[in-house]
Length: 243
Image (cartoon, rainbow, N blue to C red; front, side, top):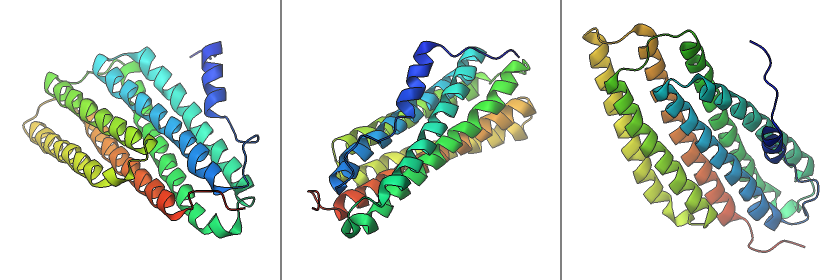
């Protein structure tokens, strides 16, 4: 396959995701509480968009969309990696009094990394499946995934909104929403096992379906863990920069 030329718009997206904070003020924890959280939020939003592209592309058997999702995932992973490198370079500039609580922010970035890795695992097998023109999802599988896509993206949107508005008191509400989707995933997983036992579907597409369900579960877990880490970081750091 010939190399694809990167369009100007994609170059701009890569620059945005790889934006570092050389010019940010790092003398106080307020910088990390506000600017740092904003960067995580942007990465989280991009993760949600890519997840949607992957599931939607699988259901529509859209090879072009899957190729784009893989490309965007690589930009995302590299952007997060660069961000972590810059964070560790500037971490020592934070006041000693707040460096201990700063590890919670690093923990949130670790969960974000795991989430992007999970998304990265999902796309390539689907792309290969579609490229080789293997049999697509059954109507029942498409219906299941459509419901999962709607519920998962709704959960991520709620999480991003609550984090942006500093609604960290909504943790219990988010856990309830997460449980709803996790129960739905388990219900569909058991139904798929019953279909497999009855001889329905092809092995390759059944494997793809089950892997998507498993990785979606991981995304739900990592994203809520990220929210909890930011919540603890927010409450354990001072509201004004230490001078």
